[in-house]
Length: 290
Image 1: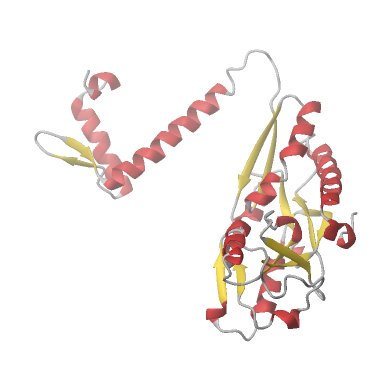
Image 2: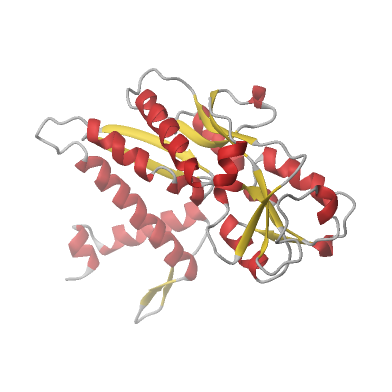
């Protein structure tokens, strides 16, 4: 069966709608000849977007087809990297035991956009480091833990045997850093301190802690990272750093009202992190729990 019959419209009507859409988008969606019609590259991109829009529309309809009367409890959580996201597994499992209709909505969002979504109430909460200047963020902050910064190097590095590291000892070391667009302000300020007076050839920028671990392991340089988010790897050595204060880690939220899941989830998350850090000997000394 040809497309117009499937759509229950005439061929001229389909052609007119396609032309109208191409005019609106200001791109050519189809290449037409006397024998064939095929998608342009722009058409292929738009087709993918169109399929997603249809899928979202279908999901929205199906949400209201539930006839058993059960209530869906949505909890929307945002963070700006995957290690933070993975921390939520056990707390969400525990929360679901008390709220079987829990529907978590988890999003990894670039740091520069995450607070806008929180302000627009597209998120119930965000998890991450406290911003040094939080007065411009229209949300409440609750500290869960403080995370010390740690020196990371390969196991065969000359500094690997040391028990503690000072900033003076790494002045000649090349640095592997989080790229600015993926970094929060607190860690960005520390990186700026480490970069001061150095040539660009002494830096390697990465999009994630995992990518940093790869370059450090390969001998490109050393890194300074929050201890909790250093990937576990027997070939990496973690050493406490003198003179660098721990970074506050917690959650931002607009209000505890209107979502009955938020308060219990915060308490579960705080308890989980308190237990989680017991497996980190370094952090047992340096952490201060609220």
